[in-house]
Image (tube, rainbow, N blue to C red):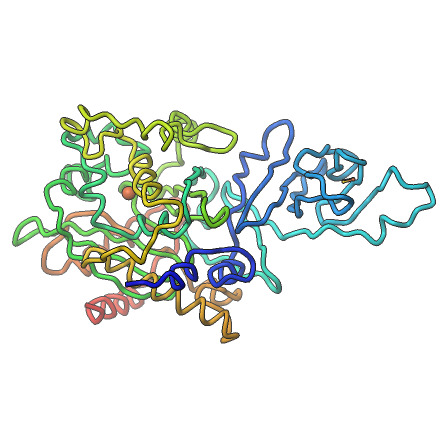
Length: 455
Ligand code: FES
Ligand SMILES: [Fe+2]
């Protein structure tokens, strides 16, 4: 059982806290590129309990600055974009994207005040629809060569959504393979041909059996968890009969992302980004290994649920997530409609803003969560103790070694599924029009040996 102190250590993210200092060693998704596409490209951003403003200046440069004006603290997110920077609406001080103060127009013409003023600016990098920000001190980590970053823009789609609870419980639902058999259970399967852009609605790889049917009928997965160079690989096995086993391979990419299969064509890479201790955003990049992504359709599907500009779900705590007891009896496990994002949101928000882990009771199905917390504590201690850089803080060379990661959802042989899933994954990635890097036969063999050894 966890103590309150341990729970605080792994959940709280303000400057100087355990998890907070760890998180400042990684790039954080800060906004969608789409948020800067309107007429006024200025977005207020709250990340790790700190307030920032992101803007695109007239020359197209993106800047992220502390949000309180260094003059007398007014909110720069209400500023004006002009004269090559962002101008505070209070007395007109003007700031460049790199934080330099360019003008202090209320001061005497001879004033040199401006030269001594600098607003803190943070590095921002654009990656396939998401602006990533670096809040830490020192040299930023290199980006790993994950498929979601390597795929050309046309093969990806980015979106986000607000969740009103701590980031850790939101992440933990993504590394919990058992919940999908219950929380996301549908009493009837949809036509798999109607499944584009929807999770769990397609057929499992190599079959015509809908994922929903497998999840519903086989609800006690055997879960294997393996430590990898990027975090954890989680394999959920559902044995259908003596011959065939459903294999679902997902990944936890340290510190706060997961990579999971969405359909035989796409994966989802999803980060759970702390806004502060009690709120987080999920940011996702959907990556296609086949056709370019139908971005218009993906956007329209998601805008049915999420309301801009804050990407808040229309079904939320205030309206009981649309709970309908009749639906719960006849159609879905939750009675909250068919969008699985709503189910997950209810599950994690209903635990309270920060789950009280001193009262929980973990079982076998929580194996990946237990492992993840262990890694998280180790890495927090490493950073706190000055013991070097944590897992997934990367230099250019080590970043190139982190690829994929492999995912799979399919039915394979009960004996030999270890080789089967890798073959399916490698074939899919090798077949991608943009040529995702796939392990060579030699590397693949090494991984198979590791997997067997890990059981
Ligand atoms: S507070 Fe911003 S210019 Fe005065
Ligand atoms: Fe879920």
